[in-house]
Length: 253
Length: 84
Length: 114
Image 1 (spheres, rainbow over the protein chains, first blue to last red):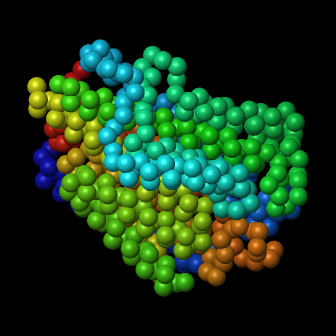
Image 2: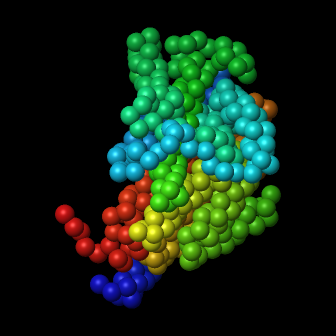
Image 3: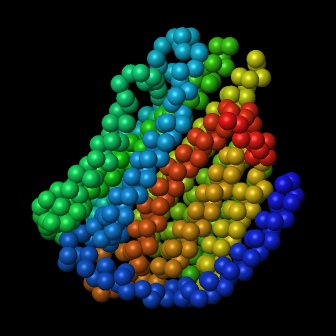
């Protein structure tokens, strides 16, 4: 089917889709009018039930924890898929010409200084987001991506990249697996100690607003943060190795 | 408050349109970063700080980095093929 | 305001689809897919919004004060991160397709070679 024919068919379909969207959105409640009951109930039981103050983290890691676990496994599987797609290419013929196992890109000193200055505070912010996830906005997912962003900053400013072709796996891969396994282990601990998978009350209540409160929710936050950070760093490392391999081959040829 | 939300909604719509209609993938990558930041601001205005935090980092750092790396890789491959 | 909020969500969805169909570059397709995904976030948060309500962080709010729905926020929050990783897999697929077919143009990849 030619491109024009494809666009015409799409236009017809899109018109139908737009009409149906308009019709179905007309049945939704007005913007600002909230008619659900689930949200109200959660807002009421967050503090007395678990001692956490962040209702969103409470929902994600307690009320809907199995949902979050499955989404975390999507992240895990996506990292594995990206590695599987890109890694086997490293057996390509130009292996012997590689001088060292470290590739250092050439960046200006100013960029490196900025990167070095930014890396530390960003890691601290990431750890703070993870640790306080059940009290203030934040949590495992947010802290994990900020931690991965630190890796991006460091590499963009000219950090070194080590290639592990057959070598021991990246630290990020170990962290990644540990996070995913940690989540499941905490869920099993809930099963063993409290009778329900991912029941978070087994780790004690604590006082509302303290850092160590809310049962196992902070621990789940940490596991999630590790997993998400590891996954994103693994994916970016794969892309980066591929790109630097190709660039180095381009230079040496 | 309502004015802020309306302005941000329009901004998000415009940014999304620009991303979808851009021709060059490099330009699209940079516009994606802007779109991500606009979305994060909209989420802040809709009283969703957790979502805004993750959207900010993902949309402005992780996603453009991945797209740019993929583009660089493709470009290196094309250069290498041209040299052969 | 209702029309604007839901309209922007629907608009982003349709414009993203237009971008996917019109694009001449696989990486552009992936970026437009992320625009389509963003439209669902806007829709979810717009549904959960409550006029005059605060964010669902109960630390400083006196109990009983109205808060925005936390359930849709939990859904959207995990979704944002999952979107990033799935986009990464799609980008890896695009790079591999480029290696196989030599170009990123979807129109050039019409044959499935075994």
